[in-house]
Amino acid sequence: MPGKILFVDDEPSFASLIRRHFRKKIRAKEYDFVFAGNGVEALEKLESDRPLDLVFTDINMPKMDGLTLLDKIQEVDPEVKTVVLSAYNDMKNIRTAMNRGAFDFLTKPIDFEDLEITIKRALNQVWQFRENKKELQLAQAQLIQREKMSALGELIAGVAHEINNPIGFISGNLETAQEYIKDLLGIINLYQQEFPNHSSKIAARIDEIDLTFVINDFPVLLASMKEGTERIREISNSLRIFSRSDVSSKVAFNIHEGIDSTLMILKHRLKANSQRPEIDIIKNYGELPLVYCLPGQINQVFMNAIANAIDALDEVSEEKEFDQIKSRPNTITISTEIGNGELGIGNGELAIGNGELGIGNGELGIGAVEHEEVTLDGENQPRKAKLKTQNSIDTIPRPMPDLPHSLLPTQNSELKTQNSSMQDAQFPIPNSQFITIRIKDNGPGMSEETIARVFETNFTTKPPGKGTGLGLSISRQIVEELHGGHICCVSAVGEGTEFAISIPIKSISEIN
Figure (cartoon, rainbow, N blue to C red):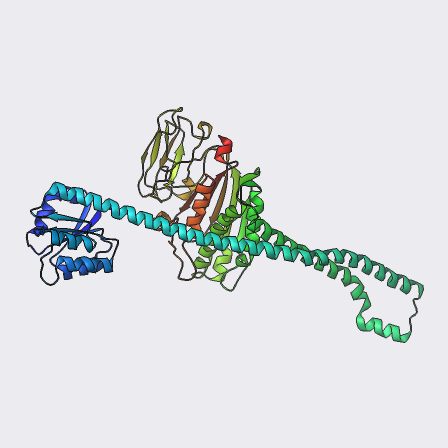
């Protein structure tokens, strides 16, 4: 993104002078210049051409002088750096400008070498400040979200514990009650055999209560109650597995139990409603070993991905008739497998070839990718990588996980990515040391613009009040930063959306 700079000067030839000198950088889109003739126009430009990075202003101008403008800029946008560019280079003006927040003071006639140095210094500071601010906001948002999830996890664990106690009483007593009822019914049956001729009063009462039906239905009733207690016990167990608030370090965890507990908690959202039939869950579970991870955090990733799939299906259902949806049911397919060196989703084709690997850019540049490749300089030097990316999800550098040589692709491997359909989508991941979970819906899909921003903090396509824009951002941090894995999203309009999560079976340090 080019640096956007506002020059404020009342000299008619000033704008052409600046454009002429920086014409190459303007053509290269390194800089984007905006011009104003006085302070009043400059304030209008600050509003209409947001966001501006840097303002150069003269001092002596009609309507509003430059020193007054400095004060106004601080009120409108304190992140913008300001530089005074004036022929009035006396110490009083310099001191006044610096006291009013000016980043620097340059004198006329313009020394363009000095001007270029000042522009670079100022832009670097502005961009660094904004990046630091963005990271701080992200950290604050994630901290708040984690505290919420932690509190929720403790609440869920507490509720599950409290449910277990009375359910234990009921379940235990039901077994005893079944024995008692069996004995009582046996006595009634024996009495009927020994004394088949009842008095008229007893016969009337037997007919009134329909004794035969009661005897036949009572065991069914108790079995139904027992099934209900087992169902509550399963829910309680799912809550306990999902929360896992008692775990603060990585432990061996059954991924399938985590997914099933998440589905149990979201079951009310999967049921049929007035707008659509029930959402079908298709499980393609592979044979997975226990995975060393933070269970509560990984379950949160599953929750975010599945909840997003449900939201997408609910959204598209509003535009369809009930019978139309029944003919092509809404589905969420969840697949798991041990990684085989390939993560079968993405926007490209995988070929084993000549030593080039397009796994991202060390930044997880996966998504609406036009072309990307990483060239390894040799099997014994896997860390030396050359990278080219365009239109990747994340342009903020993220270091590649510190993987041993055995987990990196061989020297003779090549990945070429293109804008192909989801059926052709392939991205490699390290080999069988990883497990892969895919969560795919047959909803409306997403545009390339949405895919490119799907993991951004505070980005959401949901209406106000329904989405925070934090779920997927936090999910990526959990998978990549806390577990050394990968998460990516692949979608096309009309073809649904798939989230793929790959995490190491053991931590990277243990593998090393």
